[in-house]
Amino acid sequence: MPNPKPRQTEEFKAKRFQQLGENYGELADKNTCVRLPKAEHEAISALGKGKTPWLRRVLVEAARRELMSSTTEDIDPSQSTDEP
Image (tube, rainbow, N blue to C red; front, side, top):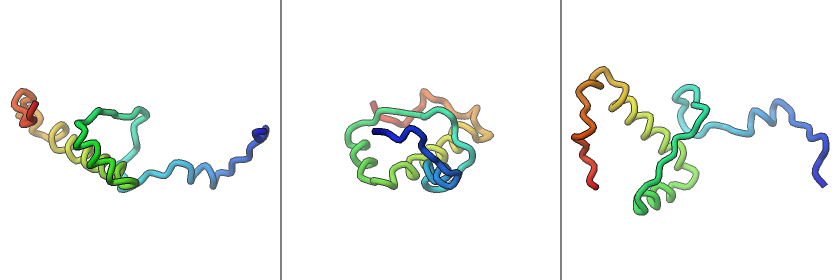
């Protein structure tokens, strides 16, 4: 039978969802999700608990470098180096 009056202290609430890795600022309310090719997915999944901090770091660095830099006008998405 579930506890009808659960008691959650402020200390408990503060420890529930702790951000892993570096703090890059306030997190967005929504997740960013993508499907990856199998090989890359397996390599990233092999990071275990280090997966989230690694993905956050790589995505933040890429967004800042490619999307938020002062030379944003120079970026042409049709010139992508990604292979099909």
